[in-house]
Image (cartoon, rainbow, N blue to C red):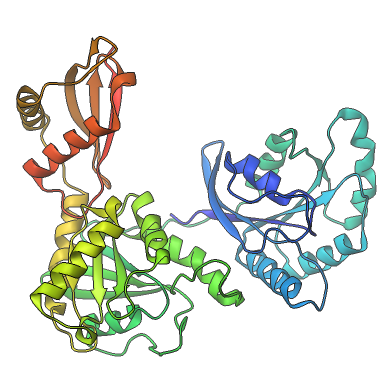
Length: 436
C-alpha cells in the first residue's frame, strides 16, 4: 500500500530541519543556524498513531535570482507537488515576513491540504503571537517548538486527519515483483528492453532519461513477473535538476513494492560509492537482492576477469554477501537467460518458511559442535528457535539473557541457517528474546 507523503515547507531558517529530526527521531538533516544549509530534500519514514507516512525535508523557499537559491526553490516546489499534505513552518518570533507571504502564494497554487505550524513558541505566554498568522489564510495555526519538542503531537494529529484515502492495490501472490535500481546510465532501461525483447522503455545515452517508475507485466519460464523500472539515483550534491531529485522518492517507492530488487552495476565504469548507497536502500528495506553486472561485453570477459570483479563486489558490498551476482550484457543479451530463474529463486527464498522442529535440530546440532559464549561468567543458553516471519525471513532466539547475545553469535546462527536451508539472495533477521 502506498504511504501518504508529507512535505515540510517554509522560508529559510525557520527550523524545518530541527522539526524534521524531531519527527523522525534522530538527526537526519544537517542543522545549522545559517540560511540555505539544507540544499536537497531528505526523505524519511515516520509513524504516528499506527499510521506510517513519508516525510520530506526541503530547502527553504527564497525568492531570488541567485542560481543556488533558485534551485532550492525548485526542489521545494517539486516536494510540494509530490506531497499529499504540507506542513508550512513559520517563525513565531519574527511575525509574518514578505518571504512567508511568497511561500503562501506558492502553496495557494498547489491546492494541497496545508497545516500551518508556528515554530519557536516555547511557552504558554508566547501563544499570543499566533493571532497574526491567521492572516496567511491557512486556518488555525499550531504552536510548536522544534527545539523543545512541544506541540508536535497536536500538529501530527491534524496532518494525519488530512491524509487521502489511498486505495490498496491487491498484489497477486503468485506474481513476482522486481525492480531495477542503480546510478543513471548503468543500463537499467536497456536491460528491461532486453528482458522483454522489445523497446518498451525509452533508452538514451543521456543520464537520467527515465523519469518515472514503469510497471511491465511479463510471463517467462512458467512464471508471472512485474518489472518496475526506476529512474537512476544520482549522487547528492552533484546535480540539482529537479526531476532527478524527484525520481529518488519514486525509486524508493519502487523498492517498497518489490519482492526482489536488482542492483545494477556498470562493468565499464566500475563500482562507485553511490552504488553502495543505492544497494543500502534495498538492504535496509529487507528485500531480496540480485547484483547484476551489466555491460560485461565492454570489458575483458575471461574467467579471471570475472572472478576478480566478483571479488571486488564482495569486498565493496560486505553487507550483501548473501546476494547472488550475475554478469550479463543487455546489448548482446549474453547470459540474459539466467536472470529470471535467479530472480525466481531469490523470491522463493525471501518467502521461505522452515519447520520449527527441523530448525531447532539444526541449531542445537550446531551449538553442540560450537559451544555458546560466556560473558562475565554467564553462559548464553539458546532454549528455542522459531521463524516468525517472511519477506524477509525473521527468526527469534529464545535465550536466558538477550543482553549477552553478541552480533557475532547472530551471524553464526545466520550462517548455519543459510548452510542448511539456502535463503539465497535474501537478508535474514535474527531477534534475541528472553524466554518467559
